[in-house]
Image 1 (cartoon, rainbow, N blue to C red):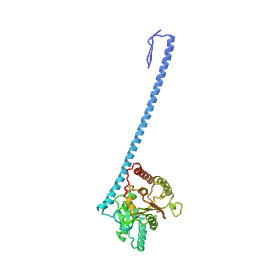
Image 2 (image 1 turned 30 degrees about the vertical axis):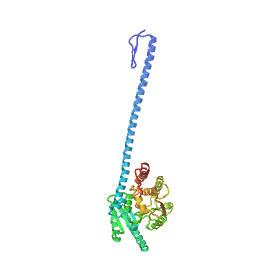
Image 3 (image 1 turned 60 degrees about the horizontal axis):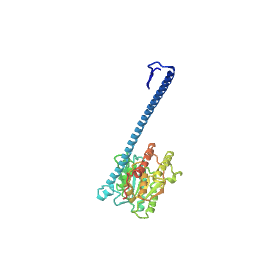
Amino acid sequence: MGRSHDRQDHLHVVAPIGHGDGVALRCRAWKLGADRGAWRTRRSERRRRGGRLTEWNVETQVVVVGATVLLRKAWGWMTSLDEAKDALRAEMGPEATRKGCVDLPSVFQEPQKELTVVVPAYNEAERIGSMLRETLEYLEKRKSMQPGFEWEVIVVDDGSKDRTCHVVSEFAKKHGNEKVRCLRLAKNAGKGYAVRRGMLGGRGKKLLMADADGATRIEEYDRLERALEKLTQGNEGQPAVSVGSRAHLESASTAQRSFYRTVLMHGFHACVWMVVGGYIKDTQCGFKLFNRKAAQQIYANQRLKRWCFDVELIYLAKKLGIPVTEVAVNWTEIPGSKIRVWSIASMLMELLTIKIAYEWLCMWKIDFL
């Protein structure tokens, strides 16, 4: 019988062999070839899997890095809002008032008026004139009927690029700076910041927030005032808020609201319900009345500057234990709305911020004054 020598990777015959040995050797060679083919197949499969795994790892890394960047930016944004709140409070808050460091009027000083009307305005030169004219006529008439009814109107120009400030200045010249003031911000900071700036500088026992478009007529103030007095029952030290509501107008013909805004309103209200609950049906009506104690506590804690600051006001009132009543008012949509499609994303982000910053992360603290 001849000798044969084989290796794993090839077969090499070094001597003649018999018939039986040849059959066995051919079977063994076939088996080795099959094993080698299977091994190559497994190696190729591992390489393919490894390639996919490498690609998946790269995608995962991109997602993780992107999420980290977004979280850092969100954290920085929330921190900056908190710092801006502290900066404005340091300028006009109770601590600065007690130290005598406040040059301008402050809500933390003793009241000098019965009513302060705060009007945030951004590029409202076309609409604010008629609103101010109607408002000043009402206030003058109210004073003639109630001699002790002193009032002021503060228009906060939120960095307008048109003649808004000039229009307000004309009314100030006619009625005097004691009654009409225009606070002009150097750059656009948002409606929420403009309202907060005006409220912290108010001198009235009651402070009314009103939109520059005049969608809610100033005569509706009487309803809010009566509702506020019911809450306080004559106790000026009891903080209270009454807010105008358009909820009763959803199916009425007096609410001239476009279909686009109606869809946005219902979707937004659903999100608001998840953040602050449903005890206030309409948080976005720009007609809200605060007594002085409520304005001190709420606006000293406000952070949001833009779309959802109204929701934050209601949220803060709830957390501070300040009673809020909702009052039905007449409202008409005025052309010139600044709400755009991209505003929806901003609203949702700010709503989520309220939940995250106040409750989940507890990075925004509420000061009980």
